[in-house]
Every structure is written in C-alpha cells, then in structure tokens.
Amino acid sequence: TLEGLREAIGTASAGDFASRHAILLSDANMARYGLGPADFQQVLQGGAGTVNAHVVFIASFGDEAHGLARSLGSRAHFCPTPSDIPAVLRAILEHTVDGR
Image 1: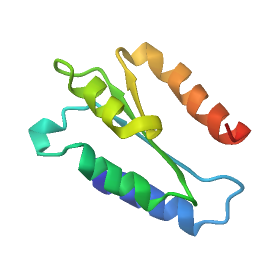
Image 2: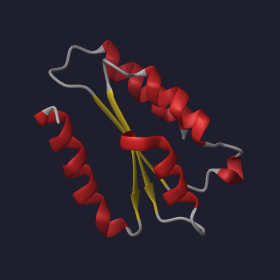
Image 3: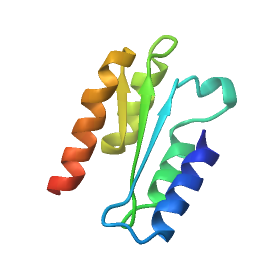
C-alpha cells in the first residue's frame, strides 16, 4: 500500500504534467500490517508541494478507516461504502483544481 503510493508520487513528480495527483484506494485494514497514521503521514508529506497525494479508505473493520482518515487530515478520506468513491474522488479533484 505505502510502496505503491510512494511509487505513484515519484512517477507523478518526475513527469511533465499540468497537474500531478496520486490517489491511493485502500481497504484500510492497516493495523493488520502494522501501519499507522505516522507511516501514511510520512509518505503523503513526501509529495507535498509537487504532487497532490491523497488516501481514500474504503469500508473497514470497526472504526479503523474513519480513525485513520481523521488523524491524517485533509489528505485522507473515508468511504463507508464503495458507492461513495466517485463523490470523494470528485471532491479531491475539484478541491485541487480550484485551489481551495
């Protein structure tokens, strides 16, 4: 999960693009892999200034995904169901394009 996000940020930052985005979709079962908010924060900040990096957590066991999204701030999002994904992606892209 984090390796994929690192690679996406690296690829986006190295390219000649009008805008640069890296959006990770994850099932949010991070405790199972020993990953926490600090791990994600480090990777998300690695692209700060050059790549609009975001994490979208989909569903979860208990409150794990919602808790992760809350702790990571505006670069993390929680979708209780997969049907919420289009609206969240739209909001991310609108926010970064509009510069809000």
